[in-house]
Image (cartoon, rainbow, N blue to C red; front, side, top):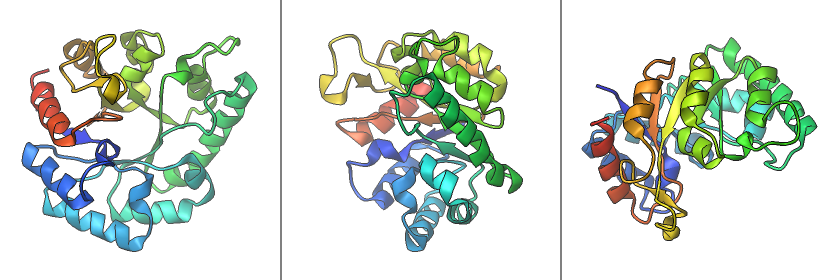
Length: 249
């Protein structure tokens, strides 16, 4: 049975954090994935740690802003150790409209930023959106530049964003299977639906063939499977329906 995680950014517009974590524990999630705003200071980290434990959850992966990963490894290592994280993930590049040279510079900085975390025993990864799959006029797409120029970085593949980038996720899962550390499990509503949720859908109710995708991910080194919705109108509804569907994949 696969353990499922939940990206806490999905619930940023709902209730206090302690209530979100209680909800996840009750619904059967085993893990939660943090995001930058949750690590604001030492007290916030201690409170988060206590609430995770209280609800039977762990936080093996976390999103931390690239600039903080690059510029303040001492602070990041401090809260990563406190929360017993395993893989630290840069959630987005500093500029989505960069040209080829910009992506090459970013990828080199990403690889350099990974060093203190790798030396400390952590995994280090990058989380994609759709724009890393846009043609910038070079021989390589931005995602290829990142994977080539930053060989020390793993990939947390946001599979639905790959689809929104105009590509078949199965192709990229096969290509980078040995670099995958995690996958974001999210769904896309049929064309014209769920405009109030930016076109995203509860997992299992959209157009993504998650049974096939999960089978493909099972052939890779992907270790963490993270439910995410960028803008749900109700997080309890989303979290409930999604884990029920995911357990059937």
